[in-house]
Length: 187
Length: 274
Image 1 (tube, rainbow over the protein chains, first blue to last red):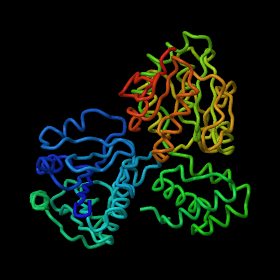
Image 2 (image 1 turned 120 degrees about the vertical axis):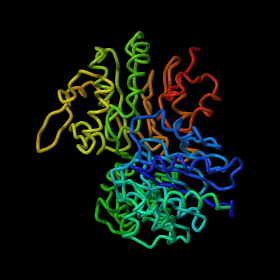
Image 3 (image 1 turned 135 degrees about the horizontal axis):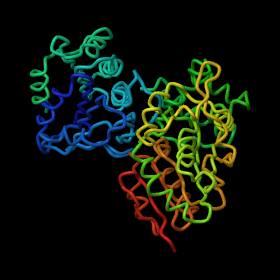
């Protein structure tokens, strides 16, 4: 557990194409934890996991409440629930008020992961039309983790990476191709 | 991360237990810390130690605090597919019996209660069920009975409603006053309201359906299992237990003698007939 990283990927409007390119990068027997938190329609349960799974080499699933965080699975925050990590390395869900008009909120996942996993966190923020994720990324930065944002010039929607830039200096500002290479080179 | 750290949260838990003998360790700690943050913010308390002092010094604050930590905020007719399943499959089967008894424990904002009442009304089954709604907080019950409705959820509730009951007018169940939409209190007149303890006791005498969606997620795994033990015990043979879509209960319930998974997708479980 101590040496494994947790890769947290947040995105909203305009991120789907990049996410679809990131997913096949994770090989079978991948040794790090991977969690995607993507803004999505609240009441559409089916189709999204299936669409993202098409090119995946690892199973992609929406974790149930109190499910342990494991390697070898790509986790996707379920629609209309906030997702957190707790100190026993389990996911915890809630239906509390939306944060930044979003449920799931990227901030909530990233903040709780920063507290639990500290400098093992790698936070990645992609294209998006609101500021969700910026505070969570700042917490990852303060916890000693690595922060990566998609270059606003490369985004369909710049608001989300721009919000990060207003709060802190990310470790890396990369276009989609370089984000994919960055993830590929993580061990 | 929550502003309230683990040490502060444990001090709040300790203070509350000393004062009221209620053990808040049943709550999932991360969720509880967010709820403590919310309470501190709502009551302008600024710090966890000020909250502890308020718990100690103001007995009337007990109910307020229980309300704050037990109230999730979501919309009416959440998960429209579930409500369609309830309407199409569960209610017709239940109402074939003599006046089935439906229990909504941990009712806090009343969204599922009102949604159920509207569906019963629309299906012509309103007079054929006996409804019980209980909460650990008197404030919850008073707010529900006042018709109060968090208008931030109006748009999503409206959207959900039209998926469940297309062609019907949602606003006929609402009234506009004091610049807000309120829910009409009339359908509540036959609901039996009661206060339960933190362990959801006592239960109504006879229960054929327990509606408990997205509430288990706020508790520790151990306490979740104790709640499920209690609910499956009080349920009548042939009765249904319904939890939330992402709640992790399948294995625990299906391992229990006498319980079966009725609808895995919607997390509907059934106690087998003896």
